[in-house]
Length: 133
Image 1 (cartoon, rainbow, N blue to C red):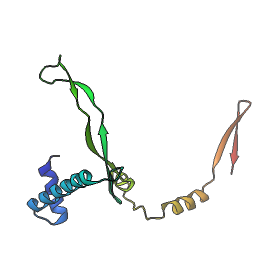
Image 2: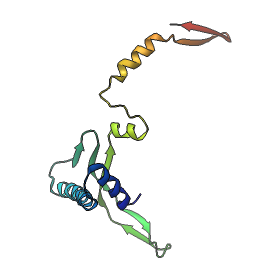
Image 3: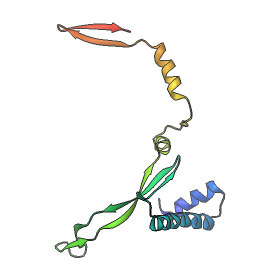
Image 4: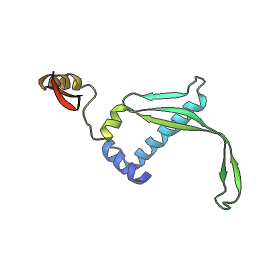
């Protein structure tokens, strides 16, 4: 997916015109960079509850290859990068679990487990013994 395809989906979902959606996305990222540049607090971190966390990290200096001349080794300088960590809610939606984190899934799972009999198999002198709980 490229930027234009993403903006089409974003504008359809938000009700914005595609040009307005492009400006909204652009301003979001520019605001994020501006915040990180002006922030004096360490670690530089922005948390979007239920969505993601953005942090600034440092990518160490390293040696690389010149793409025009692969035999030439060049030094790549240290630089700062923005890293995103997706929230568990978005990650679960990405993996097909659309349940809201506010559901009492644990309570429902505990009730289901209480109704099931658990069988543990134990090997005693090469004989399988079933232990019911």
